Length: 417
Image (cartoon, rainbow, N blue to C red; front, side):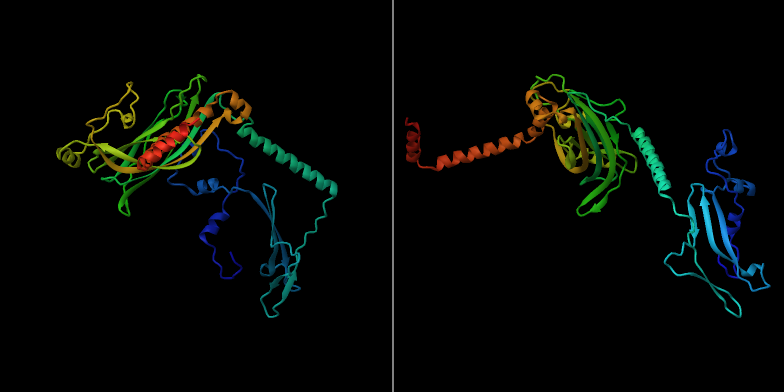
């Protein structure tokens, strides 16, 4: 509202003027009308007044001045508000306008023939707080803050949850980011986690999931479906026999990509697997997929017109099936076709008491981390062997290119005592 003579009260101001202020600590009683009926389709005027709550009750005091001429005191048009002081239920005092301080005085210019100009200042005339009172107030605040800190620490808990000795806890906060390079549109991903021997998970942990169906968009030459589907995995590895020399197997995340057409028929677009990273931290993995195919055009026509495609009965056949107990797995005659790829983001966190062991203790006992560290090196074992074989072949080729008399001379020189 302004101080204009032609001001018209708005609808909002009229409604707010009739609002009944209510304290914040008031709670509806059991069985009341508000609790039984969530929505009131035809509220009455009284209902609106009773239930329109101002969150913070405020008490207001106005300091006013009558600036009328002598003999014209008491008229409404000469009354002016010099200062407004508000105090809420939290003890906060608001002064408007603020204390003058180093600023200039406030001005009030009157309408009329004389055009009188009034100046006034607002000063804080409260007595200064004594040193003892200020120290007492600081102690009260310090005690209040310490109590609040104890309350917050009580909510969190004072004990840090630790794993059992010889146990490694693995947290994985993952995200299925996207799938790209597939033949059909409207993709979704079905995934599950396989826990090898000596691994376990809590009873409430879900080890499988299905993403939402996502339409693809064109990005360069590929059609990309952005899922941004989050998932969380928690598992434990328990070292039962410390003398066991074999390296532990790491959990594997199996997944399949499927497409859904207009008639709600699905097709398998690809299978893939991800070995959870053995190193903690952030990892971005793009995993290629494949799907089984049949010879001839009948299978592709069936896939296009009536849906369906060859599927795996056991998804672990992507790697070595869990039911396989032999020494050699033959896949002769099994035909596949390379399809698109799926991108994962994985945040891995490891927790174990072995992190707290000293170097001397680590040399005396075979800890979980020592064995798992060997597993992390097992991934690069084939790369090292392949590089060694290449170096050996190069050495043999260099040996064959040398003259025969030089080789015999060097050999005799080596065998001399």
